[in-house]
Image 1 (cartoon, rainbow, N blue to C red):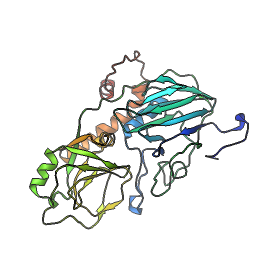
Image 2 (cartoon, one colour):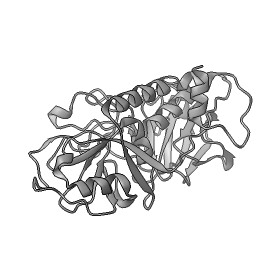
Image 3 (cartoon, rainbow, N blue to C red):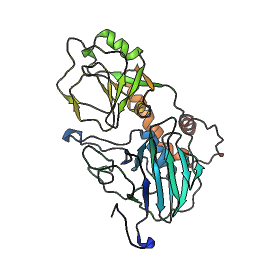
Image 4 (spheres, rainbow, N blue to C red):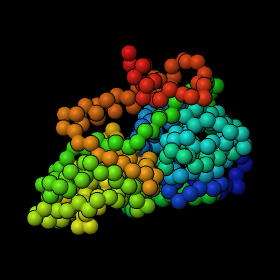
Length: 347
């Protein structure tokens, strides 16, 4: 069984991570499902794709392998396998193994009976716990990502709770050199956007406000969307409603309230509010990691720059495993930004 307790001897139990304590938004996520939006099924997937890929690179997995995504803190997990290799990424989360402090963005080899505890980070919301070899979970519509509103994917389509066992694909891992990546340095969030497709539904002054104002991340935020607060954006005489059309992760809708909503990974397939802009894929993870009260600004760019940013982002993710595996001196406390390490490795 994928969950529940077992009275079988330890030697006969499937290797697993057993949840001792979790927060409400602990779910299984991978790179998302493709091709189902037309059938009304959201693509889902990790809120911060680069952090997911970083965690997987550190344990030797493919970049899009399913991992545990958690919000604010990762909870407490007991190792029920001979050994396993894990990594925690997303931000400066405090990681403890049997109460001994460990570093995020570093591979850790754990033994049966050890406890892994992950507490809050000062610079992030979403964190990722990857395990070498991945979790033994079935696919749903081509993905292991959990879509909570539909109750599909991941761990029985729901969030993880205390007592759940995440079955591992491997009972033990071979000895390997510790891998490490420097965590990203997150500066003030300037998000690149492509204006439209319904920017003509807004007064010119409102477009200027959208570009030149600070927007505060609201407490009304989840995997479906982030509400932003700032100047009221007034609609033109075309109004605050459109014939519903498709939306994507990064679409910025503006309802009649005049306050933007940035749609995220679990967005609905269509929407009836005009979209003033779309956040480029490369910057979505930065938006996702903004905590309530933080501010963001939008910088419009042309489509060809957005395409180039997507290509660069995809290439950087593809290169993460090579960066993690490359021999290098032990990191000192002040690590180089991850973006610099990736750039240097491509020279």
